[in-house]
Image 1 (cartoon, rainbow, N blue to C red):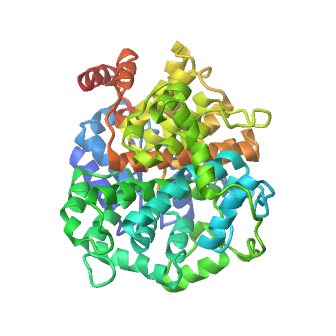
Image 2: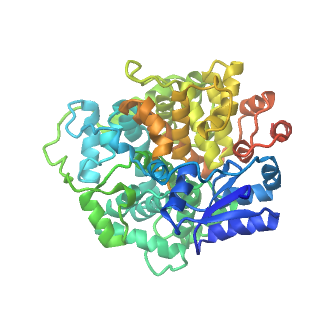
Image 3: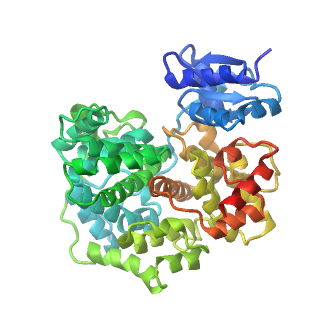
Amino acid sequence: MPSKVQIFSKPDCPYCEAAKSALDETGLPFDAHDVTASDRNADLSIFHSGVSTVPQIFIGETHVNGSADLLALKVADRLLPLAAQALGSLDLDRYSDAELNAGAEDYVLRDAIPEIDGSRSDNESDWPILQLYKEFFGFWPNCFYYQYHWPEVAYRQFVYCHNVGAIGGGKEVLGAPVMNALGYATSNAHGCNYCQVHSASVGGDESAGYATAIDAARDGDYSGEFGPFEAALAELVAHAATNSVTDDDLARVRGYGDDARFTKLPVEANISAAAMIASAFGFLNVFNDLTGVKVEAEWAQKAENGAGIDTGRHGASEDRQSTNLDYDLPEGGPSMAMMIANYGKDAMLAGGPMQYMRKHVGLKPAWVDVWPLPLRPTHVRFYVGVMTDEDSDTNSVSITPELKHLMARVSHIAKGNDYLAAVEGFLAWIAGGKSSQAVERVRHAFDAAHGREMNAEAFTDRERAALQLAWVSAQTPLTTPRRFVRAAIEHYTPTELVHLITVCAMASMLQRFAAIAKPEMEPEVCDFLSDHDLPLDTLAIKYPLPSDIRRSVTAVRQMA
């Protein structure tokens, strides 16, 4: 008879061994399936989990996503109770080899989203972006062919309201070599080959060496460009990608402040700049991995030769050379500074960024209060642009602000960011009219994303598809198994898919920033959770037990 616990693993995997040891120490018998032993085992793991890494553990039919969650359950004394309430075992014989293989296939969404070329745009609002990338990259990057499906927000606001300030400001504080190294480190931790290639190629021949040098420094070899301070910053942004930043990570950066090799600015300015780099790549990693955008061929070759970085699941766009900006760009129109100021003025006219957020989403978020001060007006403009319907074409896109906040909540629960999961739940409740139905949708959004039994009337199939995509977007490394993205492709148009992907990317951007900045919970959010008996602990939301409601009320009231 099969055990309640099934674990998919592979030989010589320390994470797999840690998971098995935890099960042994807890006294839980398990059946192990080596994913290297057969294609069926490999497909079974991805088909049922939606994740390409191992170990993947199932307790009954409850999916426990990797060794970190399993160990957290053990430490929290939740592992045995979870097993005790499980009924039966995962049915490994239900599907044929062909069904498993089709469902586990990494189906890149670029195949469902046609490209839109904005490299010769006649909209003068786009001209500063074209000029920037001709100077910075030498070409209009491939990801923009998909971001241009939502030109006002995913393209213009991303560049003007976030990327210019985050990357440009980070470069000023950290220096170009460290900026490139941190972009590579956070993208490497996420697993985005597209952004790793870009980080190793954007600075010419030297930048390929930065990737190799920062890896060496993180291993304790400081003979290259980078020393212990830069290595500590790289660890910080890498851990931000997996939402695992600790106080020790921050203390290490501060402790090595006197050893900085590139910056003369205070340590706190460097931490803030690193958070901005991590946040920018948080957006890009998720957007680019969900779409599976191809890497520009010339840079793919450069990164492979210079740093041994391949294109992975993205592949290279051999059919298109990076010459899309090799023409005389339009002259005139607004400057980059004018466009940034134009987007920032809305928040200032509203009385400041916090008042702007209160007006548009119903909360003055604590994370905005710790965002770098000069970038707050444009940041809130971008957040509102993505998460509300202020800048959506309602004639062609029908995605409610409530669903967007629920998607972000699912992403943050999957990542284990208690703070942002709670805030986005609160904002979803506001967007849903503060009704009892809105509370239940907040309570069960993760259940819907993960295919658990629930009230069939709480969400439509279309909404479940969006929530499931949000769950997929929070995995590292991020792949898109056909079984887990098929519903989104079926229920949404290509342009709507880009809107959903942008919401997921925004959630990732905020998660990386919050992992480093660690904002405190807003009192209104604490009251909301307490008043409606909603758990704060994302581990409890992912793996619920009957006693969780009682525990959640106590924990939230203590925090408030």
